[in-house]
Amino acid sequence: MSLDPRPHQAYIAAVAAAAGVDSHQAPGDSQHVVAYPEAHGLLTAALHYTQRGVGSTALPNGVTLRWDQRAGWRYVPGGRPNAPETPLPVPILASPNTVAGLLAELLDDRTTRLTSSTEQFPLSQTHQRLLGRLDVIGQLEDDGWVRRDQAPDEPVALACGSVVWRLTDDHEDIWFGGDWRDSRLSGLLWSTPYTVSVPGEVIVAAARAAVTAARRPVPA
Image (cartoon, rainbow, N blue to C red; front, side):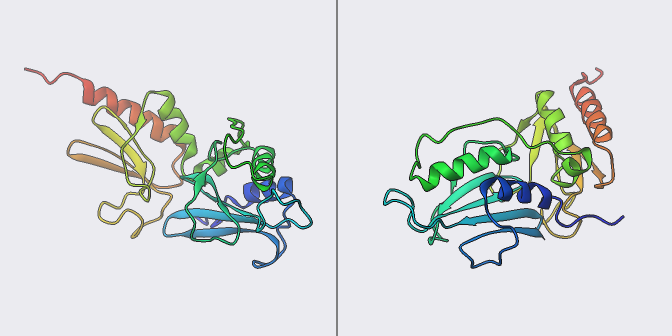
């Protein structure tokens, strides 16, 4: 099965267009956007914007918006690549117009009380699957599954009772050794892998059945 290494490209391009950033400009130009292919299990992108002829209140070196499929959107003042990232108050797949509005606020030096939004970019089932099993994550969260405490560089993991579902089936090194779009459903003394080609509804059904089994009283 041939998989798109950049399933987020259409989304990032839509954000760039809404923000007026030329996605055809090369990195290093005053305005450009880069959608990186998967690297070490993570889809990432960066949108760089430097404005010209603006007032003294605006960020003089523009701003860089960074995105990845787990942490969503953050910003860094332009010209400071090593500065701490500040999360933007929007969903991981925020609507392009929402991101463009936040860019305008940042360029006007509004770095506090940024406008929050829950509006999201519509995605096909195929892209939800390729972008990190968003088709599964949403349904399991609706079922009451919660995100496990995990380090920022770990993959998405949801838990309900003693059953855990997360991206990748590699038990030793979470991002190496297998396809990063694979999934793993596990419980006490068992683990079931699912490749990226498995439909989301199959994983959700298995997760629900596993929770039911885990909560069933043990016969005396």
